[in-house]
Length: 117
Image (cartoon, rainbow, N blue to C red; front, side, top):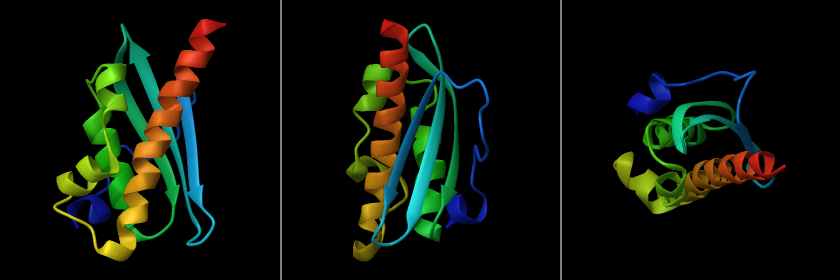
């Protein structure tokens, strides 16, 4: 509840190094996650989420979990680890934790593809 009532890292990051977008058309949740990377480490993360309380809480938790992690460590963040960090989610809201982990992974992939150019 704390991450829903007091979400961390809300907002857009204009100079993001990587951006990941994920959504679930069934429930209408949409998430955009931004990362800033220095020396292969995520130094900052922000999100914009349109959706239910669980989706907002997941977005907040994912950004907190990703900060100060290497890209490989952040890629290891799973829907299960997000749900566990939130002390569990109701079964019908587990798909929200997928959105968070998937958006983070897409942001990292976006960063890596930009870096290769």
